[in-house]
Each structure stands twice: as structure tokens, then as C-alpha cells.
Length: 263
Image 1 (cartoon, rainbow, N blue to C red):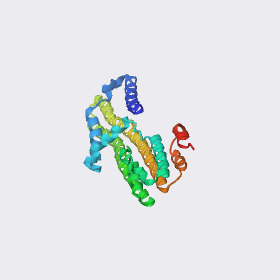
Image 2 (spheres, rainbow, N blue to C red; image 1 turned 45 degrees about the vertical axis):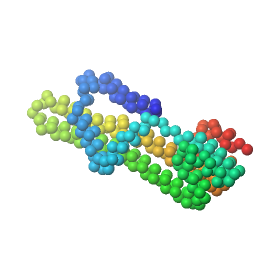
Image 3 (cartoon, one colour; image 1 turned 60 degrees about the horizontal axis):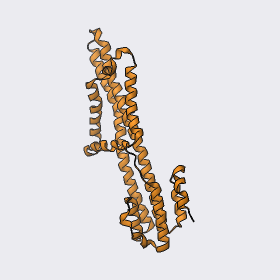
Image 4 (spheres, helix red, strand yellow; image 1 turned 90 degrees about the horizontal axis):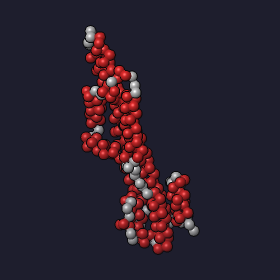
């Protein structure tokens, strides 16, 4: 589980409760900012706009994608590098066809696809085109989900403002009752609060976390592509290792550098 995401959601809600509880005494605690019609209008209304903008099956799959922020994906970059260096050494000793042994046991499907093409004797430019196309399609899918969430984040404050305008219209149409002006104004402004909370406490941070995961996965795929092409070209395993180590952060690099660069 991603503790940062859990703390982010819990801490954000706690900060809201604290702000309300320690705010002006006239706000009436949490009940003072809780208004069901406003909540329904902002959340359900903006969600319906998303339904209008994108295919339904994609919209409902979005919630599963958003749940991914609570998990830390492990792309095993260190293991991938060690495996590819070992495979390069094997190919150098026994030939490319020797890589077919154990190919079906590989856990990374992207690397497995690339090495299958290498074993089949596919030209390097064709391997690169196929694997780059797969990376591009993955990127399109990821960015599609992220774009959808960002669109919803942009609609939240807009619906909050529309709800406030609706509340003000109702208030101004009943100006004779001066005692209701203050409470009605508060209810109208609550809708703006909901729109801002939906966007800035939830949807924008979620899209940022998913973007971070996306970039890390794309970088891992690019690293695998580099390794596969290097094996296909018959590069020295040490050269391959040096290429792939550049994809790691300094701390991760130190943990395996001595093993993969051994003479």
C-alpha cells in the first residue's frame, strides 16, 4: 500500500475538519458546511459532464485506475538490468538461440516479447519499431485516463460556481425576508467549496500521482527496449550494463553497479 496516498487523503480530510471545528463559532461545525443538494450538484453534475465527454465504459473504468494511487507499483528495474546483463553474457558465450531456453519463464511480458523477436532473428529496426509502438500505445492509454481525471478536476470548480449562482438567484428572489439572506448566502458559497475540494483535494493530486507512476513505467519500458536492442546487436555485456544503469537513480545504481560491471 502507498502510505503517502493514504496519509494524503486522511490528512486532507483532517485539515478540513480542523479548519471547520476551530473556525468561527457561527459555522455550526461540520453541519455548517454539509448541504446534500450542493454536494449532489457538484459531484454528480460534473460526473455527468464527464459521461458526456467520454465513452461510458472508459468513464467507469476510471475509478479502478484512480484506486491505483493506493498501491506502489514495483517495476523491478534492478532485477531487469541484472537479468539482461546475464542474458547478454549467455548470448555472447552460446549464441542468440541459447536465449530461447527459459524464455517462457520470464515474468516481464515486454522483455519476453522483445527477446522472442531477437531469438527469431528479427532485424533490429523492426524490433525497435514494434516495441516503441507498444510503448506509445501504453502511453496513450495512460494519458487517456489522466486526461479524463484532469477534465473532471476542471469541471468541479465550475459546477461549484454554477451552484453558487443558483443559490444567489434563489436568495435574491426572496430579499423581503432579510433574516434568511445570511444563511442562504452561506449555503450558496458551500457549493463553491465543494467544487474546489473535489478538484484540489482529490482529483488533481490523484492525476499527479498517476502521472508519476506513468512516467516511471514508461522509463522502465524504454530501459528494456535499450537492453533488448543491445543484446540483438551483440554488445559487450559491460557496455550494456553501463547503458542500462543510466536509467537508475544514484541510490539504486549503487546497489547493483558492482555486480553488473564485474570483469
